[in-house]
Image (cartoon, rainbow, N blue to C red; front, side, top):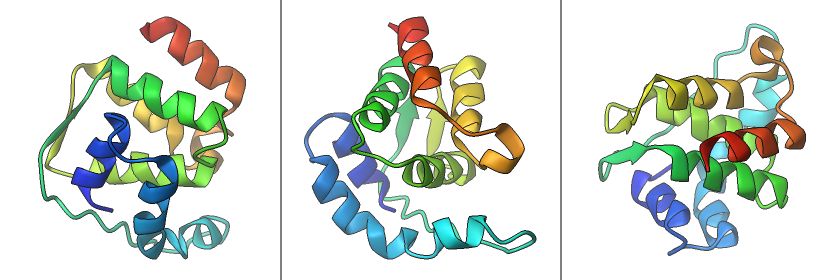
Length: 124
């Protein structure tokens, strides 16, 4: 996943459909492998720019999830990439904690639309 594409998605310069079309090659096996206990999963991050994730970006990701423009697996992949990337920073610890909620449902529980709405309410 290119960080420039994620940035453009968050700034609404790239549609979710276009983002996902360029993203699918990195995400193909992710959802399947997350269901296999003990599997290792490659997270591909092309760090072609720096990106800071704050309240707006979290709200945008939650909105895309609520609107079914991102699935929970896609949101999880984005979160895993954000946590692994040295080119992504978080505006504060609360943002980092929310990103962690998007990841592996076996560890963090299933991320729901009601929780996404709650996060939007807290960050706007």
